[in-house]
Image (cartoon, rainbow, N blue to C red; front, side, top):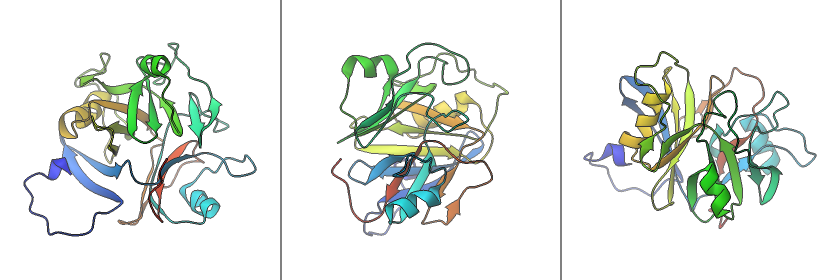
Length: 241
């Protein structure tokens, strides 16, 4: 990982998902790096249309082990996505481009698109381009837009929560999923992606309900109600998307 530059590592086979704890501006984060070649998918419902709601339910449905998973976008009380949502090429919710209440409506917001490449795209740019995403989830606000922090973020803000989100590399070959292990504000969370992970675009997924699963470390967050959209990597080979 780039933030481990300068550390001498012994040669070993590349892992499908690599998660590490790092410190940034006095707070702890867990950051997971996923390559575009891995079997990264979004998950919301089972074959009957019932909401999955948990990481374990993904494994039960797919019959495969999860390597990594995280909640991936805001949802209503019934767990339906607040914004645009595509799973396996099927659109469940249209793009919401209007300003509104809450973090989702703090424009600009954006879309995380999984295809041959992995991209975070600002919502209006996404609508104009119309990319062919196999999976897509809309959330907000954007944390980083073309290398700049969201213009509404306040340095030193006392609005602090556990937060999670995703940033993508400029070449679209890598996604960096991060969750704060301490309560942080939007400004500091955004600078994690801009300055530490150096992702030109990054998207906030959620706060307060943020959860992560990492098989390698044995981490499996719990303590909240059922989740809505989730993103995860399944074991058993890369997906061509």
